Length: 490
Image 1 (tube, rainbow, N blue to C red):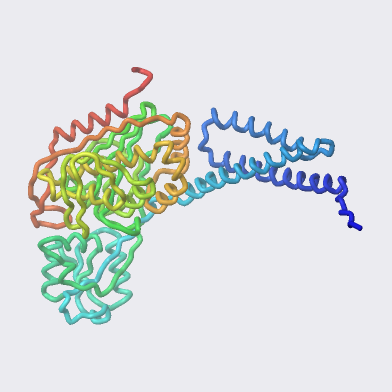
Image 2: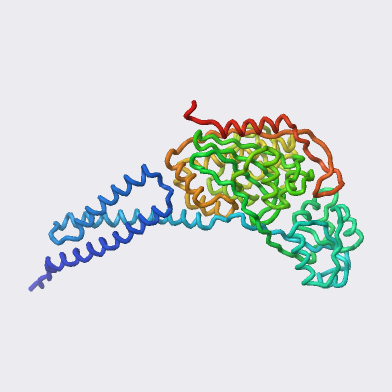
C-alpha cells in the first residue's frame, strides 16, 4: 500500500502568511520612519520635490499596511503586497544609505580651523652633527620672525635641548650660517623654497630633527545667502602632497565668482609670481609666498589686490587634483599646444586639441610652465581648463548618479574649507532644484617679467611678475559685472 502524503492544513499556511506579513509591515514602518527622518535632517531636497514625495510615499505606505495587517484580505493580495513592501523597503534602505553618506560627509568636512607647520633642524651633509643631542650648548640660527608658529617652534626646541637660538635678518644670512657648518632651524615651506636652483639646500644638507606646530586660523568668513546672493570663493592650490593641513606655498590662486541667480561662474586666475603687497606686513612679495604665512594671509592679500570680499575659501593640494579627476572617470581638455612635461618624475605628452586626462596627467597638465614661451601665463590658462572640465563633469547628472558616494568620499579627504554645512546644503538643493547648466568664464591677470627683492627671501633679487594695472582693473570690472547681473532685469 502506498503511504498517503500528509497535507499541511490550510489554516497553518494562513497563520504563517499572517505572521510574515505583520513582521514585514512592522519592519517597513521602522524603515520608512527612519528614511523620512534622515531626509528631513539632510534638508537638501527642494520643497517642490519633498512635499509631493512625502504625500505619495505616505499614501502608498498606508495602502500597503492595510493589505498586510488585517486578517480578511485575500491571500493573493497579501502576497502581492508583501513582495511590493519588501521591494519598497529595500529601495528606502539604498536611498537612505546615500542620504546617510551625505550627512556623514557634511559632518566631517575639514574646516580650516588649523594649519600645521613643520620645522627642521638642519646641518650640512658632511657636518660633524649627526643628531639633535650633538647641538647641546651650541648656537642654532633661525630667521627672525614675529609669527607665533616660529616662536612655538623655538619653545619646543629649547625644551628638547639646551642651545642658544640666534635671529637672522634674511634667508641669505641663514644659508651663510649653514655653509659655515652651523645648524639652522627652518620652516619646511622655506626649506622647500630654498631647495630650488641656486641654493639646492636639500641636496647638501641633512635633517637632524623635526618639530610640528599647529597654527590656529581665525575664521574670516563673510557669510551671504548662497541660494540667492553672488559670492566669491578663493581656491588655493598648495605646493605639496599628502596632509591638506600642511602650510605651503600657494601655487594655484583663483577667485571663483558665483552668481546663483544667473548660473554664471567667473574664474579669475592670478599668477603665482604676481608681485603683491602682503596684507599683514605691508611688504612686497610673490603671491605664492603668502601661503607660507597661512590661508588667511593669502585671502586678505587678494582682497586688497582686487578690492573685493572673499566670502569663502577652499584649500586643495596635488593629491586633491589626482583623486578627484580619477573618481569622476577622467576629464577632457583642449590643449593650446603640443608639449612634454618637465621635472615631474614622469614625462607626459600632450597634443594640441582634445586630450583625455586621468588624475596624474591632469596634475602634470596644470603644473607645466617650462614648455611655453608664456610660462606661468599659459600654466594659469591650463589650470583654468582643468578646473572648468572638473566642474562641468562633476555637476552633470550622469556623474552624480554613478559616482556620488565615491565623489563625496574623495572630496571629504582632499580639501579644507570655511564654507559651512548649511551653505553647502543650500548649494546642493539649488543644483537639484534647477539642474542648471552653469556658464563658466575665465579671466587671467597679466603682468611683465621683472626681478625684485621679496619679503620672504630678503634682499636677493628673484623673478617676479610686475602687475599690469589695466588687467587688474579689467578683472575688478568683470567680477563686479558677474556679481551684479540680475536675470529679472534682462
